[in-house]
Length: 206
Image 1 (tube, one colour):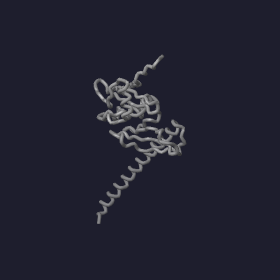
Image 2 (cartoon, helix red, strand yellow):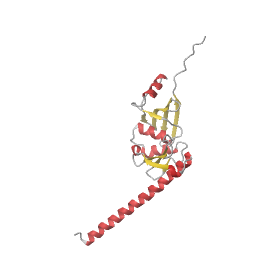
Image 3 (tube, helix red, strand yellow):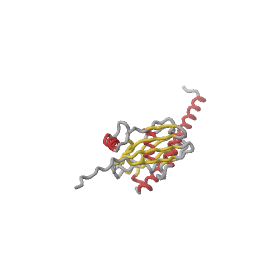
Image 4 (tube, helix red, strand yellow):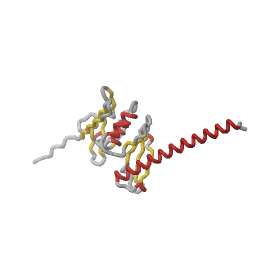
């Protein structure tokens, strides 16, 4: 049998663990409700139709990522949200570059260039489309090369700031673009997006 004092300590430990778990679940529910409300407001969905799902492949360094979808509509429209280590929620105001800058600054140290590019595409309203990687969409990569531009997978460099260069493909328009982003130490994020297109062919005039 477990001695009485030891049993009391064990029960106290279990109670404290249960209380801690309940607190985490309550906070997570509040966070989920904020994401549901943000998605319903942004995309004019009914909150009852919004489902929030973890997007764990992007999770790193204390940043947790989520997507919101409408269960009554095709999943081509997705809301992107992330919880920062300090419990701030990124993505609830999907304009500008503030959310992307906060995520990159808080959780981007040591992350690969592909991760940085994915975060930019999801959380900056200046960038959109499919990130082109070395083993990515061959049609899109060919379009970059046909424009006379050398293709490269996402590249991340560091000097006086952190610099990211990559290509994206606008699936709807079928046009690739080069993205160049600079994250300064003060958290300022500057992004340039340049469409890449082959020169138009001259017609056979008569």
